[in-house]
Image 1 (cartoon, rainbow, N blue to C red):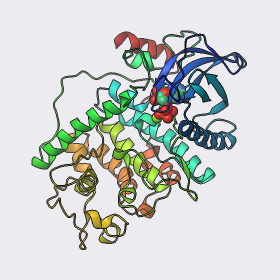
Image 2: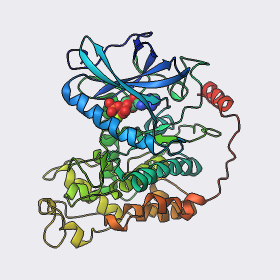
Image 3: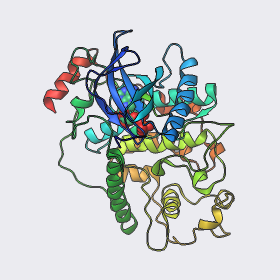
Image 4: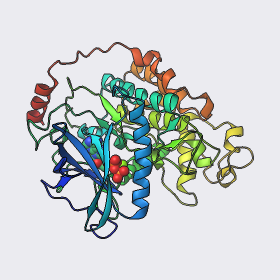
Length: 423
Ligand code: ADP
Ligand code: MG
């Protein structure tokens, strides 16, 4: 991909934007871009430099992202609304063409890495609550103040706020090196030219989750005993921000019918019944579950005689009960999956395993904790999009406002050093 129209090769120390930014090290990469830690000589601070591939379609996508990031920055002058801040953007000419570059505030690891760091065992409820508060603050802002739908909310697109100054330790900055050893020659997301690493991992996880789910269809005895010792995140501040506006749209000006990453996709998107802000709430619900359990809520897979979409709908109904007939048959694609009674055409026998039982039986949550969390999550996973609570309503939910039992350590940095030694 380092050819005409592709990525721009960067070397440490390379100057950008007339020498204002100096490349320090690679943070990660996506399908369209590489992201570098850079030093901003103007503000004397570290930033994330996202360098887009140069071909026309990538430039177009970058302009789109810049439009949404700019709108988000313009409405959030105090930078308190849990959305990544766009600092600057410019064009950079290189041997592979013109690259649009976005300068973003420097953030830490994604929640996907956090979940991995915790060995897919899920986070403590208080940590989940802190993360949910940030994500909901971001969504409330995007939805209510900007009229924007993110359309790709998932753990990979939520980054922890970095609490370490890279200037103090430029190599070991952010949470990344503390959470996990860098893989290959990159620290962040990233991947190969064909499929990015995170996607490969997601696929692998999906496979595992599918294995677990088939196990669940076969028997009601779930849960895996694990001898792994728990890793402590005590004292780590779980502030985070929503990133990746490459797929964002305006509620009144939508671009695509098929949106969202598969596992976080709302039922109305699958059925093509039209969508709005509440698709982000669905993805938020899936993400919250994943933070608590370490497992994806829905990891559909095509099977013998049915496709991924139909499996996805089946998994939803196994957890949430039968989809109301009106909703089931109301979409442009409904006839592909449902008969006129609102039953799936090819997957006939569903095993109902409701959320509160799943959390207790399989994930061993205490009854009371499972009940509280289910009361928070169930309305968000409503089949009827208009019945789902808004981000603002979620923020006011009693579960959000349970007083934390954990006192936040005041010296987060020393706690994290400690963690690094233990880890
Ligand atoms: P793409 O749209 O190409 O997928 P992303 O915006 O998702 O690009 O960024 C790719 C990766 O770069 C992310 O997964 C993350 O590891 C890293 N990254 C992106 N933005 C930042 C940031 N502001 N601070 C630190 N790392 C970032
Ligand atoms: Mg991305």
